[in-house]
Length: 138
Image (tube, rainbow, N blue to C red; front, side, top):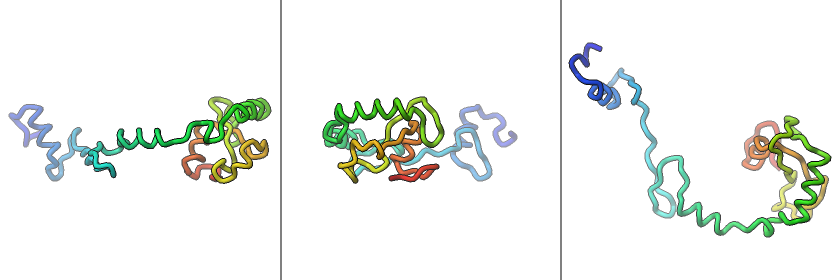
């Protein structure tokens, strides 16, 4: 540490984090720049816009309008009684009943038992959000 001889620790850290060529310190990792949301708000990188998130949630139909009524919950209970484990990994912890063909695409198959499958939260989220990891989206 010859170049820093006689300097205090905070000065060394400031010099290292300034990005001098060849030096990498503990604090050398840069932060991502904030972004401007479509509504005009300045948002920290990687965070959702609080103003737009509230507007999207307010515009979302409630569970009954999306097809999850008492008939659905009755069918869901019956399906879990006969198919308790995830069809991908077999887990019985934190499972969801998933529509193989979405209600949005085929509302007539909403209460069709042959259109249901049991998925753990991990696999349900992967399917729902379109990540191709072991099961096809559909």
